[in-house]
Image 1 (cartoon, helix red, strand yellow):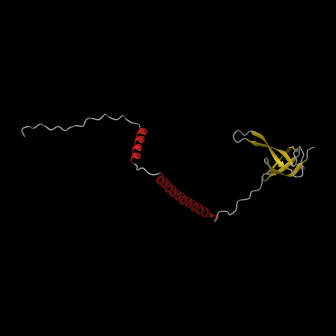
Image 2 (spheres, one colour):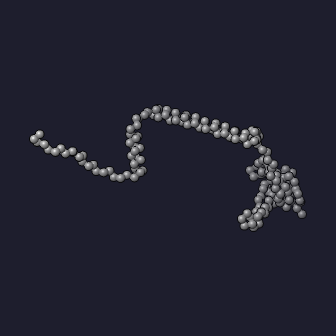
Image 3 (cartoon, helix red, strand yellow):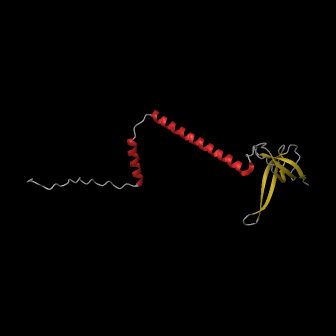
Length: 171
C-alpha cells in the first residue's frame, strides 16, 4: 500500500437542466410516454374493446333507469294517492269573447280579442289585442258582431278556434 491515492468518487457530469415546462406541456409529455408504452393492437382488438365498453355502459344505464323508475313509483305511492293516475286529466277548452273584424273567407271569421290588464310592477293599465282565426260553420257572424269562441283541435294552418255563439249583432 505504498501507492495510496485517495479515491475520489467520480461525479457524473452535471446534465444540462431541462427547460421548465408548463403544466400543459408536462401532461402532453406524460401522455406521449404512456402511449408509447402501450402494446400495439389490431383494429379488431380495438373494436372488441370498444364494444365491450359500450355494453358495460349500456347495462349501467339500464340499471340506473330501473332504479329511478322504482324510486318514482315508490314516491308516488307514499304521497297518499296510491297509484299514479292511469289517464291524463281532461281540461276544459279555453273560451274568449271578441269582436269580428273580418268575415270575408268562407266558414272563417277573424276575431279581435282586446285585453286590458294591470302591469305587475308599474300598475299601469296595459292594453293589447290578439287576432284569432275562427271556424264559423254556418257563416253566421258578420263584421262588428260580439262573439264567444272556444279553442278546438287544429282545423287548418291558422284556425284553432270555433264559434260558439253570437252575443251581440252589429248595428
